Image (tube, rainbow, N blue to C red; front, side, top):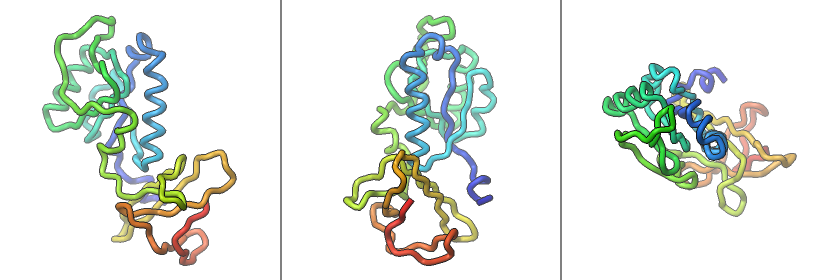
Length: 193
């Protein structure tokens, strides 16, 4: 359990009071939706804010979901962070186009622009839960951690159903068996959550 808690977060979501003020209709749902998508993909992410741009250095990747506005100070720090090797992913068009006064900015920050549906492709996600028909299981999160040379999984069912049967895949191939730490027994293929 401690291995999961101690796992370094390398991805952060960008929180912007400015976008919350000027683009609330699009920004809040985008922020929430991207957070949930990353969670379901097993990517535990942190948050950075335009109010504390010094925190950018704690992460390798910053995901910017529908952030149309940000402060001039945070913009400059983000641009510097990117120039020093940081990875910026914009979700949606028009990101960082305006300042905290809702005025257009002439400068830009390079990054990868994706849609909500293609965000997962930006990460090397090796493990997924799939339904018996082979489709990706909705509302099931699979997080992995390497501990003492062994891979451990934290698999959670976030759906409204009482239980769900899924299979764990490793790069698309269904795992044939796994050791369940709760029951302390070997289990074959399917997992009921």
